[in-house]
Length: 415
Ligand SMILES: Cc1ncc(COP(=O)(O)O)c(C=O)c1O
Image (cartoon, rainbow, N blue to C red; front, side, top):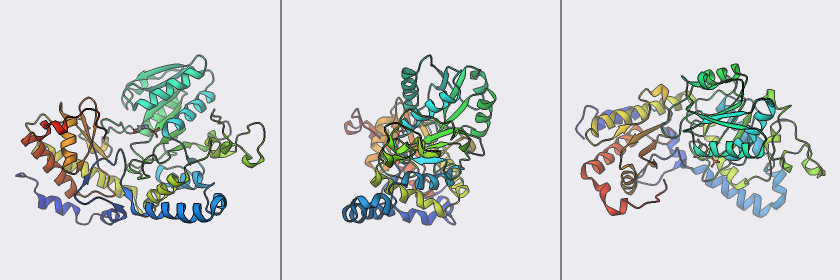
């Protein structure tokens, strides 16, 4: 690279990084620059120990005694309390369970029941599709519910709100562009309109400071396999503000959410508190891997995490501007770091084969149709020098046009 910002300059940015040592807590394959932690986070080394202990000693040796003896039964709350510290929630306001999709289903039903005279769910036309699909599912089983789709952001939310709206389901960070929404302001406006605010935290948890109680949020849900590094298919979580716990009802009334699960009563009585958002038996091995991911945050300050996240994404954008001019690459994320999460999206008509060519070089990013190349910057295990390497490879792929090779133009590639 010939440029204003040199490799030496970039190396200097890594000196004094307060998170540098955290990288050692992850297994990262040699030679890989991993920029897809916004889809599937890297593996914490401690996850292997957790899985080993949970499978070999607790399951194999202790068998069913581990439900109590090893704390398996309480894991949804134990892990929920770990997450609470990261999300500005109180202990007992989050349970780890199920999937984001099913937790949004519960939250939407709960919200509609709290606003029985209002028929409308407002959600994002351009949000992650499962949010809309789930809202459609909720509509299909309740009478007289209407779904309204809007382009929700900090500036236009007021125009979309009226007194027919029961619940607004909105993403904290947009999965395509990485744009951050102002949780406090938007929740305030939703409340001013008398509606319930439900936030999807999938792209912010673990990488962006979240203050659910400070923003007075009603419900939230998110996944743990992205920046929280819980592993493929690791369980999701749901937050319900304490003020709703008394009246909160949800339709997936399984035995784990019962007040007396081991009384095996013939009818359902919801547990008190957050456990009423549980449904059935949870994937304990996955939960234990997730515990390793969450434990890493015990020693971290989210201010440092956010600071490094902004520094990495700023560097990436600056290097793209510097090195990739003339190749039809556009920055599709906000250029102001304050308005951006920990990802940078670039648009290019040939984004899919470019991502495939980068992956073959060990620079792993993601692609979303029709033309978005997504790069996630996980501050826990990436350095500024990784960013340098990624842009150097991207430039080579663009200049050489190696992405034109047949092997990079195979339809159906998932990243
Ligand atoms: C914003 C958002 N919401 C929901 C989901 C899906 O969640 P799950 O598969 O846990 O239901 C994703 C997955 O990538 C997502 O990005």
